[in-house]
Image (cartoon, rainbow, N blue to C red; front, side, top):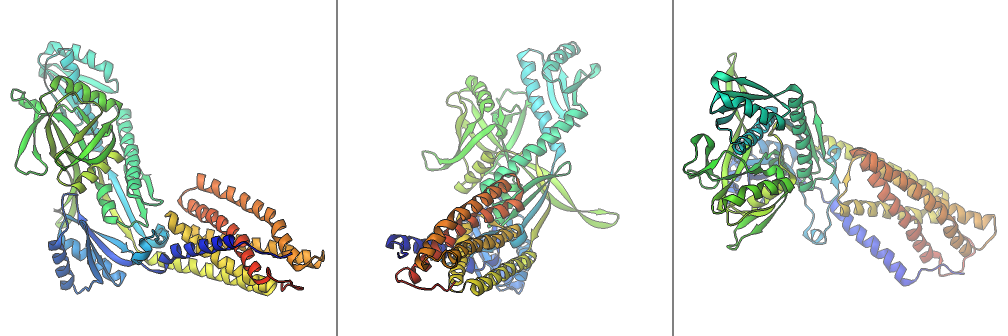
Length: 615
């Protein structure tokens, strides 16, 4: 009885190992410390003039970059050392100004031939590679003001439908103030509005013909909680759009949100997209005969100095956008195709049906902050000042009644259209958020963790190899080759699947090595038992050892795999990292411990009759 694999099975095993080596290779090419420069918004491009400014600024600062390259509208500057990278970031940000985002990055050095087959290095978690930590603050005052503005718009519509004449509806000092045409209309207006706005407290100022609405304390807290929860959901969606692996987005205190982006490649884009508090408002163009109090004037976004007047009433906002994608119009100019949800489609239909032939404006709203220096007690102090920019991106004639699907034209370029679509698709923020703290977690701590993690793997692997060689001799060599192959295949799988490796993940790899060699111990022990206790021939012992041990190995691995699935389902980020490497390691160890070792045994002993096995 001889032990042989058919040719196709040997070739298949060798092919799997070869593919694993190729996809594990990128991890041998360390990344370069770099800074990435992009425009603060899509309309600002980074070209050759900015590259010249960067090179002059670095030369003046005594920093010699490793390379400077430009891709699309992004400038990437590579350095030889991390300390040069950090110095260059501050230097370039001061030289380029607030119109550009200068962010720390890690530039891959993987050869192009590996990239062409989709091979990439393993994503490292925040504890290994470093990353970006953002602390954001939700503007609660703006959240309340937005809610009051929506209420004011509803009040105007209701009073018009009920033919209750009013002079003005405004939002002032956290209240909605309704100026009626006469005192006699105060009671009917209050009676009608109270049925729809039960969360508001109503007070009257008869002499001034004013009806004042204010939110009670419980309603204010609900608005604030909704703003934070909605912003959490939106930020998670935006991070998912960026493709960041295992991010952390969670609430911190009453009005703050923590965002951590481990292993992120494009930190500049992350900051721009996360920090963009953009929203849309759809309004009708104001008629010439409109009351000046019901009209607002705005500039065009891409044509400064040119203005148009829009009604104060808002048809709907970006909060009702269900989906958005980039397309091109008949002139091959970029556009954003919008699909509204049920409520947004109904509001759009009701507003456009009687206004066919009029123009509708799309108002783009951005909440930003700027830092200004003030003097307090004789000292210069930097103060963060929030401000809002509102501009028109489109003003087009309504050709027919609109429903839930339509398009926005008049956008500057494709990149700007892509960013607008991303923001709308990921969801609008319920309230503006501001960066309170931005901290780049450097690679120093990560390098120590990586060094210690690799050292633990090396020590564990060395001890296992020594034991297997001493106890099982030639069969120990087979097991050690399979163990090394197992490690290569595991790294290749982590790279190919885009999984994120964390410190607990390294612990999972160490445990996987123990699980893998355990399978070979079972097989070798069974072969020894067949030879020395049952007296069967070496060839028969090999065959029986693999067949009889398989059921035990499979049972043990399935049990552990179920535990890994449970850990991944209910665990947090670090626990999930451990579960991912453990579960993938179980799959690779089953393959290497059984198929790879059996192939080696067959090569050495399968084609000849032997009297004694060195085991």
